[in-house]
Image 1 (cartoon, rainbow, N blue to C red):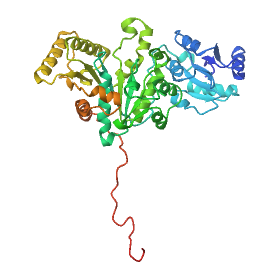
Image 2: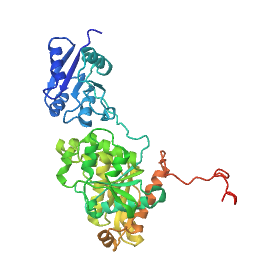
Image 3: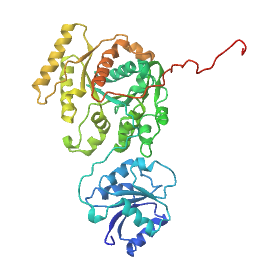
Length: 432
């Protein structure tokens, strides 16, 4: 195998000794590699996306910008990632790193690592390599996305569902409500005095190593009276620019691996590059697109008015175009009238609008949430929401999960154990 040759990208601090030594080996043909130096993580990404095949990326363990997204950019093109001088245990395998080398590695060490992890350039074919997500837990919870027409009350519906699930004694404390909207308002609705940490800090923690469940739970707001935890959202709309795709995917993995139910309050904007021709639009809608694409159920909230039903029909069409199947969607009409006749009329109108549309959507009859005049007072006083508000959502969500082929089966909290007679010894008057 002496004819093997590798094309290697390198990124390190300019004064790193191994960086200059490797360049000398490549120049003098001491090792069969073509070495391409890079000065930043952005240059690495640009070269990887340039169409040229690379065998490996050699990167210093202390380089700024070494995270899941950079590793994924390399591995998705078929290149291995070798970290040089990893001074700390950073969960490298969890990040997708192929291997590690000490700072003072020799030529034989390098060749051994390349033969083990990196394909020779002659074997690299221009193909799309499907990446695999590294599950942070062997036990996964359920992800329910709640979206809706602006002003319809999707955030309140998400809170009501989380409270209803958390009210179940077996689910108390294993439900998290995640504010994944660009204009996060759950901190205000929960009267959270401290708004840090939130979504941005949670995603930042997942840029590198795997985050333990205990640390994830320490970064959420504890809504004690309502029986669930809340992950507070972005503090400013423009903070979406700091959310990286692979780190956000890892955040969702961490949440569903730490909680039995993850209720995600998300926006309804799902446009991407394919629809708009703009990568910036896709990046802005990353949170909603990633969440909806991974959700087990999608709750769509609208109002039983002429404008509300029209907007809800448009949103349902957008979800169908995005790839959400009809059996995953739960339509909800908030502030519905008490009259059964008016409710039935609203349901028929929605069905007629959907039948007249191009998309084939059959979502069934919508759920109806009643108008609650005491809701504003509950929010102002930061007390529990009215129980009837979340009951229809709870019944439908649990019915869907229990009837699914892969019905949720997660470990419960420790339950009382029956005492075997005689196992605790005996008490007598003499012993007393």
